[in-house]
Each structure stands twice: as structure tokens, then as C-alpha cells.
Amino acid sequence: MVFRFMSEERYLLIDAYNVIYATDELREVLRGNLDAARDRLTEMVASIHDAEGVRTALILDSRNTSLEVDHPFGKKTFEWIYAPAGLSADGVIERIVARISNPARVTVVSQDNMVRESIRANGAMAMDAEELFAWARACGVRLIQDAQRRRKANASEWKNGLDIDL
Image (cartoon, rainbow, N blue to C red; front, side):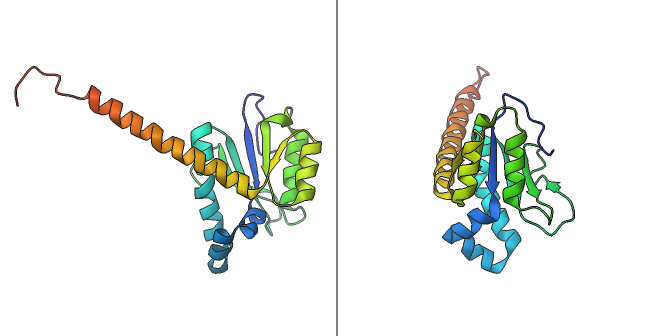
């Protein structure tokens, strides 16, 4: 399948259009452009990928004849997975969870109660969009704090090391 399931990795699978339609901000962006809404959702959750090293995939419904994968940041650990026309994003998510050796390392985000219950029944964690965005905001804050600490450490390390008055 798309993921090479490594037992130590954590996975975040997002039912992308489901989350977009459930979120006021993204639904507003969607009115103008479906790709723009997908891109905005990608930006919103990138902090989780970056701060926690969680392998992240937005699962999207499509009209494609086969499953297609794109890497928006050029990283193999962040994917847009386009479901084939004959299978919904929900179906792709359920198949991924069913095939992984340790489903407890998977978190699925969907507003669909039936999908969340199915995922939990298979041993994975499930959350809704509100929980996802709270997690993303917390990771964003952590990334900013980490960057500030690094800048401060770098500033103290790069003081004039030459014993010369300037």
C-alpha cells in the first residue's frame, strides 16, 4: 500500500474533505477553490508533522482510476492520498488501519461517527476536527518556542570569539 508500516512510526490519517466541510474557515475557502481548501488544511496540520514527527496523510476523494499519492512538501512522510473513484476516502482509511501491524500507533481524524467507531474497533485512535486543530495549535506554539530557544542559544554562541576590541 502507500505507507511502509514501521512499528515505531506514528501515523495521522485525515479524512480531508470531511474535515474541510466540517470547519467554518475551510468551508469558506472551499467556496472559492477546492485545492485552496486542501492547501490550507495542509498548512494547518503541518505543525503536527514537524513538531512530533508524525507521518501525516490527507486522504482525499477523487475521480482518479487508481490510488494516487502526492508529496506537497517533497517529504515522503507527508502525503496527499487520492482515493480511486471506486473507493471513498473512508474506505482507504479503513484499509490502511486494517493492514497496519500496530493500529494503536494510528490516529484518524473524521467528523463521521461511523468512521471513528470503525477505526476504534480496529484498535486505532480517532478524533474530530476540533481536537485536530487544538493539537495543531499546540504543536505550532511548541515550534515557535523551540525556534526562539535555538535563536537565543545561537546568539550566545556567536559572540565575538576573537579577543579584539571592535
